[in-house]
Length: 432
Ligand SMILES: NC(=O)c1ccc[n+]([C@@H]2O[C@H](COP(=O)([O-])OP(=O)(O)OC[C@H]3O[C@@H](n4cnc5c(N)ncnc54)[C@H](O)[C@@H]3O)[C@@H](O)[C@H]2O)c1
Image 1 (cartoon, rainbow, N blue to C red):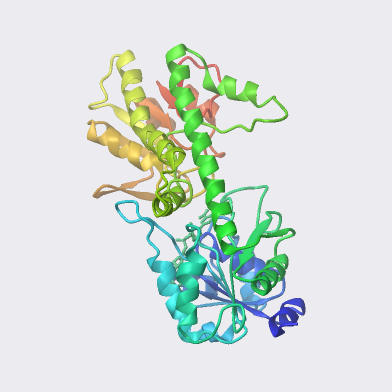
Image 2 (image 1 turned 180 degrees about the vertical axis):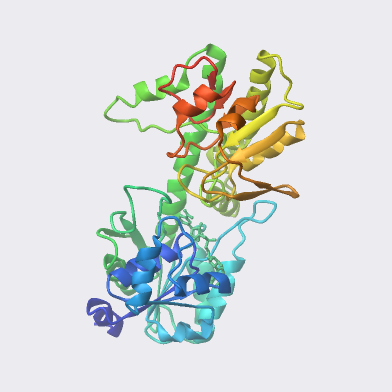
């Protein structure tokens, strides 16, 4: 039995989590709650200080859970990567963004692999969690780690295990979301499976890192394509005078063979808008064009433009031009009940409306300030007077805390991109 297996079983293994963001911080807290000593690494001193003071900056991690882990001496954060040698297992949760031309940017993964290789210890398990194209673990991370002279699967272990976190979800967390793991060899898979079994009820081992990498991207492509499908249907329904929201609810009554996806002003977050491009790009190496991915991205990326033109029409119908109209946008986070504005379609929408001359303000209980092109906008208080003064109130993100009845009764005109007002009968509401 490898030494590490014994240490995981008796919980004496120390777990290193690199990148304490949306993925890494909840994972660090989960391992410490399972009784493991955790050393968290982040390149931002501010985040490290915050963790060590027990102050959470991630919506899914309550400060009380974080401070309990710190107080129990089970969690510590540092910027000092030389301390990687202290840990038995390393989970890499660093960003995998795109370049400006939408090419995969693996610079964080490469940089971190190089850091790990400087301190790699025999017997350590390294797991990449960052979303990436199939082949990254074996073709990019493994060769960097093997430059040390240590051999993967023999002197150290290496696996890929995608994070499936659904930020803001009340139902799913690390514990009850099955975790897929694929190692470069059977021992790596077995060790990674054992490790994640300490925090997740179900672990699904697969035969290789490539299968695990492809699984994660497939899940995100699946969402992107289905959202695009319903976005396209929304445009047709509008032309035909049919409520897409009623259609979706009716279709969802079918107990098999259908699952509902909902239209919106576009897609956002760190996953769905970006990850499919990782696969589309890799596919070209095989003279293969992933047409569904491109088509879905095209439809979804057009949605803010579509919404802007529908708002213009709605204002026009009430005798107003968008140029000079007072528009109040509700919600700038990319989805409800989170504070994350990465790739948020609201940002694009606000930018488009401002370019057309609208006088823009926004409210978001989770996002106090937001950068739009060169300007910083600040969230305004949702006073009755503000609602009644606006020529159009746009529901861009349907945060649960909004009182739609109050908003509808105070506003002149509402454009609802999320079906948030489905249950209301006010004549001033236009639904997408
Ligand atoms: N956010 C999600 O919902 C989600 C879900 C599943 C998978 N993912 C994937 O997980 C990965 C991480 O995403 P995230 O949302 O947690 O990103 P994030 O930006 O919230 O966190 C990444 C953290 O890594 C830190 N960092 C960057 N380089 C570092 C380095 N070399 N050493 C130490 N720290 C470093 C950053 O300072 C940041 O705190 C990405 O690949 C993403 O695609 C994200």
